[in-house]
Length: 230
Image 1 (cartoon, helix red, strand yellow):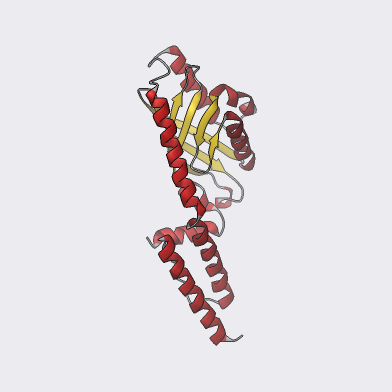
Image 2 (cartoon, one colour):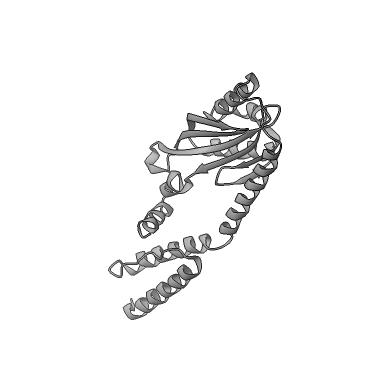
């Protein structure tokens, strides 16, 4: 193997990564020259793909999602609280929402989605922004099908003038994540109901990187290294 040529290629790749870092404002992972050239080149390629993905469209998509959330929230808040605070319909709406999401693998899950979410619901779980109960149902069913376990334990609820903040602990399990061990993460969901007690706004606040992506093979290692460099 031409070690001089391999060294020149590694130098060129490191220069490209530093240029990408300056453009995306993300840290560049250091590549050890003591590793075998092939391993080093694979690691560099994975880093390049990750940095390229993070520096392009997703950042704009995230800003658009936040803008949509704030616009929807402002419109709904202008109409005031749809349910009487402390009333029976409010209690039933809260119970339906918690019961639905407590277990995405429940046999009757699909049949109950339309009872909980309004036709024109705005939904964002930090992974996707969806509009309409049909999109929400398809997304939740696909998520449940992809996982061996997906449960949510609701531990606290705060309500203020029609805004409801649910604090929860989620447990997911998949045989290819963390060697099949259960993964737990914490988060919060901001909800607003309509006059029928159905959810018209669902906005999650959740660390999807720590709760999911860090446990994906190869990608998880890169993310942990990047976070360690911050």
